[in-house]
Image (cartoon, rainbow over all chains, first blue to last red; front, side):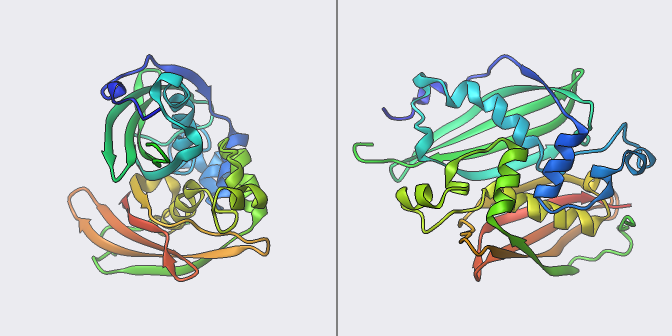
Length: 149
Length: 140
């Protein structure tokens, strides 16, 4: 089944809340090789004006991908996840994601286009905490066309 | 870590290259921390079965490593206000591990907002693996 273009423009109700923990931030920071004390030491983070340790700049993708699930796992979307590769990713941070945050994410399917037998899908997730925006994560995935696509 | 200032930063300034090792264990740690358990990033047999040369790193691991490098240069992870990239080539991680090289060039500095745009170059085995990898950082 090809990717369903009818989903373009669709917005989903907010999903979450997703709890952000200091341990989750530390594990992510270690995995991406960051020894920035802002991820590991709450006193350093507070001295820099944060409520607790803060996440690395790409951590938001872990929350955005949980919000994406409602769309990409919907059989009607026509997305064969085994054919998906990540094409582009962009973050606009309004303030750092911080341990203790309870994050809600609102997903919008910004565009669905076809090129060279592949489908390119751009989704945008607005992440908020207590109604305040914290990060806009925009992702383009490529669904590779196969036989009969 | 000291915060970089806009006054000390000029278009054309560079940092790196910094060499970052990436082992299979790194990818397992990233999978666990991120929740992305796609077997192409951990299971050699599976990866080769779907036509890949070997296990490949998560694109988001590579972007994350570039984020760590630009955060350290700016003086803190809270300094990165915008960050985007295209994933142009996979980082192939054989059983013995691999490495990526990360360097940055300041494209512009806005003295009013004290924000700088940094162009990051990330290569593996001589190939550019990220395209148009740009970070906007808030300097002091």
